[in-house]
Image (cartoon, rainbow, N blue to C red; front, top):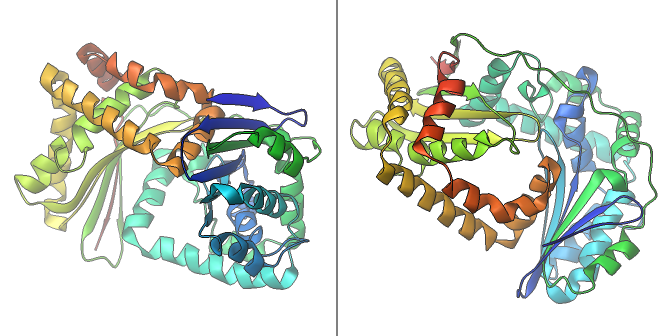
Length: 399
């Protein structure tokens, strides 16, 4: 892996692999966590608009020029970044760089296209709020955090999305879409790719706004929030505030997630679904981000089972104090295998490289397995004591 900073401030990360395709992902260091209350949803709206036409290409030309070559073009908005990616056969790498640089640097923000896309995004907002498995995560984060902007939905709200104007988008784009606020990760044949990036991404620096640091209050006691909704099943998430990706405890929490929630062999799946048949969708999530983190367990089940399911989860968390060396080894082996498989997927690897660079340093990817292997049972006990005792946040959707 090679990390290069260009004169205009753009960070380039390359990972040379013997592939017939190349994946290029541009990560812009802006997401929903950087939005003011009046502009909730603007990061996501701008992401949509970049595909709606540039000074050189129509919306159809942006997609067709890549897809007609068998390539894949996509984008996504997160709390802490916005990503634009193309995977394409090697011989079309120049085209991919041209299209990506064009849509990122030259969007026109056409008024008619804004109004058309506004309706698309409002439908997306409605979908997220209507679908219980999507909504449960907004509901959980909104109650987990008191001040941190991760409590707000990435897509914005109907009210804010309806009010966003072209002027807002142009100003937002000018404010954040500057080369020193971007990282480009490339996986595949990276021969002379940095020189090509210098040609296509020869943007000028612009002043960057200072990001505001949020001091999230510590949670000192359990809390539970139940919301009545028109659902046939009940949806439970039980979770905790934890730490960012670059904290040493994040590796221990990865191992805990593997113990509790790895597929069909995790403890939660085994106890809740396999042994007792109390729910279909059972799992655990660990999300260590750039400046925050959370750990959560989730189950969809019948209303009458909620108390029992919650008790099982809390029992399994408590039982982590009695983890055996065999169980610890299995969790580590799972994480190692998962990491290897993800690293062989060029799109997943490019995304990981960008994320780790935003967190601290992309080269830390190369030490991930080593740090996982160092996790001990005492580390597990310490982390359970610090983050899981008496700090539970529970949310429930039910009729």
